Length: 530
Image 1 (cartoon, one colour):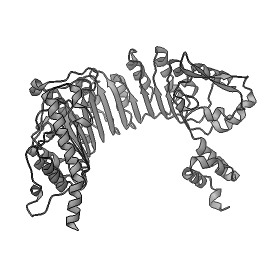
Image 2 (image 1 turned 60 degrees about the vertical axis):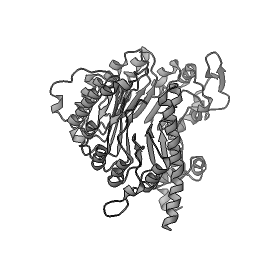
Image 3 (image 1 turned 90 degrees about the vertical axis):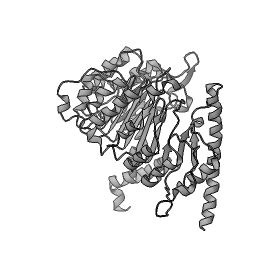
């Protein structure tokens, strides 16, 4: 055998490239291949099934409890110490474990009973129960209330990545307080779907205060003390708060410290826009690359302008680093939908979007407003010149009560001229104003073309002549192959009868005609060139 294949590190790299189904055969080739192949084969487990199948046959019997709609496993005989010998040969190789509450086959679709996990704990011969002593990544999704407490069976000192879902009781929240002691090396923490009737904010905050190595965290919400603690962690790169409540002011002088020095990703969702402002004040030193803000309520134009101003004021360090900006609202159940009479209150002026111009390196922008934005060709021209690195741009109304757009087809020429990487564009247009393809000729007689745009989302844009529109678009954006309207995301007929519904359906049919004409016109132009 070649000397290279006697080097464990090289054999391990080879094993990484081998299909998983072939690894058992590779492990049996020779002793030098055995350990590296088994390490890769057992490194990640999606259930306890493989480990327990290493036990002698007949110990466990699968039963279905129709009353509880869950799977349980009956122990047919006592588990002997010798029955654990073979499973433990492989258990120490497991570095990543995903428990989704279904055993042993996720396709069964039914949760495992807590009784099975209890039996497994009782028959384990060494205490405390540590079936996977070298576990580094744990994902634990509790599908039944009784199973969450058994997360303690898998927590260990080497875990650095932890995902938990569905803590449902006060006892479950109490159990979370042990995580910091059990997992002192924890870097990535995510907790999802807690019982909304519990006061989990204090529990999560107390847990965070005990963790000093965090690099990524996803939680529903935190209090001021926990956020100040995170702000001072030198290695924190990603922070997500999915249901943040309104906070008090932070400690005096904290903004004078170097806070969030490594934070690149900030995702925050709140019931009201006021829940967002305090956290933005801590972003003065953060080199953000991804900023995602969601608001459950419907936000007026005035309050949205205040949010934009806060982003500009406190995220100065991110002027050159920010690559993705996403703002959406109206995420809450039963959110009030404005009507046409509310346009003065909710319509966002184009100058407010232009205020975001300092973020010149954005590649993805997704902005919504309840009744849309008052944009025209001049404003989108300024945006195109400002965001020349843009790849995906979406600016439109959240609801289907639109203020008439003043962006014509001619306004799209700015994107063709200044945004060579633009792949997806979502903007309401006024396509009733005919713009012949000849408008794409530049002053020097060269035609303006952009060969990256693949998809346009025009929402409920008015349109007159589909063929003229298709001729213009295929000339300026020859790779364009998809045009979507609001009917793609929402059926206008669900809004009930009315002139707006009839109009929306008619526009949708015309835009479908534009999409159908694009490949035909593209073929004609190809033939003309040849």
